[in-house]
Length: 74
Figure 1 (cartoon, helix red, strand yellow):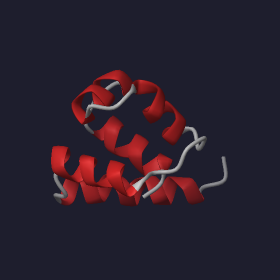
Figure 2 (spheres, one colour):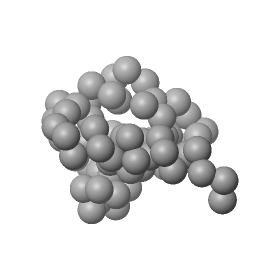
Figure 3 (cartoon, one colour):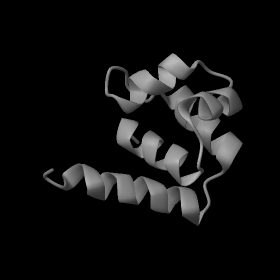
Figure 4 (cartoon, helix red, strand yellow):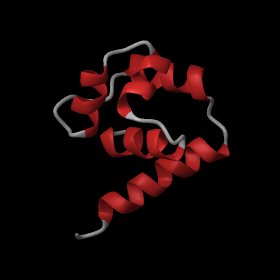
């Protein structure tokens, strides 16, 4: 999982960075840094996302879409 996948999950859930961070009990600046590639996705953050939002097909699909969009040349 990378920052683009985190952004994809957040957008799929219809949340702002602040709302997403609040749900995960972390700072909004951390979410911003992760989404913009300034910080990596730690195993702790992966676990928090899975525990908070689950690992259902919609989450997996959001990650896959994010991976695909990362491959597109814009």
